[in-house]
Amino acid sequence: MDVLSARGLDTAALPTAVTIERPRNPEHGDYATNLALQTAKKVGVASRDLAGWLADALTGTDAISSVEVAGPGFLNLRLAADAQGAIVRDVLKAGEAYGRGDQLAGTRINLEFVSANPTGPIHLGGTRWAAVGDALGRILTANGGEVTREYYFNDAGAQIDRFVRSLIAAAKGGPAPEDGYAGGYIGDIAAEVIRQEPSALTSEDSHEVFRRIGVNLMFEEIKKDLHDFGTDFDVFFHEDSLHKSGAVTKAVEQLKDSGALYFENGAWWLRSTEFGDDKDRVVIKSDGDPAYIAGDIAYLVDKRSRGFDLCIYMLGADHHGYIGRLKAAASALGDDPASVEVLIGQLVNLVSEGKPVRMSKRAGTVITMQDLVEAVGVDAARYAMSRSSADSSLDIDLDLLRKRSNDNPVFYVQYAHARLSSVLRNAADLGVTPGDAVEELTHDREGDLIRTVGEFPRVVATAGELREPHRVARYLEELAGTYHRFYEACRVLPRGDEETTELHRARLSLCAATRQVFANGLALLGVTAPERM
Image (cartoon, rainbow, N blue to C red):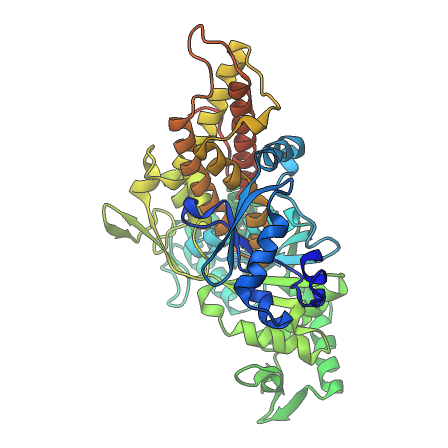
């Protein structure tokens, strides 16, 4: 930077990225930065002196109207009217592309989420991942990533056996096995198996018949529920294929050959503690059968062989140990553990009339995706699941989500979009068109709205970087509040015989830009942007 070079200081000391934030108090300017505090010690000057030099250099530039030095060296900046207007123009020019970036350009990402076992309807934990995972996929794509959404279809193992035994018991009219599955859906599926294969109960291979038809019926229902929820997948990967193809055996042999496995007490163990895990893991049990992690290892090999640079796993609250074991597996395979990310989602609880909701009409013991959607609708369900950090437990108030009031977050945001749409329709009826004289927008509420609109690309980038879709939802709520305050303070359309001015048209442009950001943000969450409510 010239201000350093002119004083013989080392410009290499400047950080590659400058942190700029919006102050909580608008009186402190439009933006603030601690650049001088970051840099002063490295270049050997007092931070307040450096801040003063930076302020002199920045004041009066095309984008900045004034700079104030505060405290030990903070810089408070105010944008020039032209710079604020440029934000409005940028949004309108970019349209649906506004907020998109290229931070992940060239990165192939495998995003695995939901992956519920096909032994029953999707419960609330899976519903949360359906909403959060789909939103994350959209956000990663918006940041330039090439995202493949994948569902790991667990069609092997003891849970499937219990599911099949439950179907057979229901078909015979008896109670569910002690370790089996109950609920009305079991009887429905069992009846459909008999309808498709009348001899299923008398067949020599009855278990296989019920397994083949029953698991397929359950999984088709899961896929339909997900599709109706707005969540679709590019790949449905069958766990059983890893065993039938020999991929598990091949991966285990690879680890034996590399010395990453050792034999003890009749079993083969992964030296996972050497790669950061909290304990070594059994890969081949003493009875010769592969442990569950053997399939995980083969699955990771398969993902990487398909050319994915980053493999993101979104798992339930009871899978915390998978973080260490999957990264250890990657390291043991000679891979970069950074190519594996594991996100853990916490539990979801439903509340109605201040009391927990515990029973499902169909599943019996758990609340399902269908139950939630029937209660509040897809938009409210998706938004409610996405607006909080997935690594914290979540209480969802059904009564609140049914309200058509500003207390309901999804209604609050959607209503802002609908209100903007109404303004633009009314403008068209009056023959008022958006104008380009956006330098006319000098009111404090106009500035607040412009700066909030301008934050959207940074929010999308941060949500992608931190894998936190809830940041988009919370931003939209902030934007809604800022817009409503603007609407109350700034008349957009002329009254009666009042002449249309450039200010009216400029404000209409700001409304059009704000509506675009709402539409773009809601699309990232997979929530509709209604034009009327």
